[in-house]
Image (cartoon, rainbow, N blue to C red):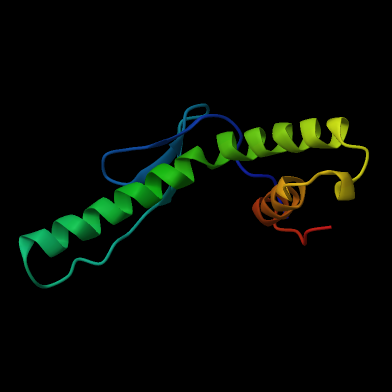
Length: 103
């Protein structure tokens, strides 16, 4: 798997995810434009906006997950000693973000 575009990502008002440096479009979040009421169309747009914001936060979330996992691994001697299961959850999320299987 190739590396993702590093840096700060932003969700623009029209649901386009862009990187700050270099400034380029990474993806667009599309949403269905339902026939129906204005409220239904508005709710579909709100869902697309929420998805775009989550995608834009992905690099920061990945970095935070890696830092948290590093802390857990340094603090506990083994995965079995870590009572909450957070280490395994973080490993799985990081692997998913990197396109790999959890170890």
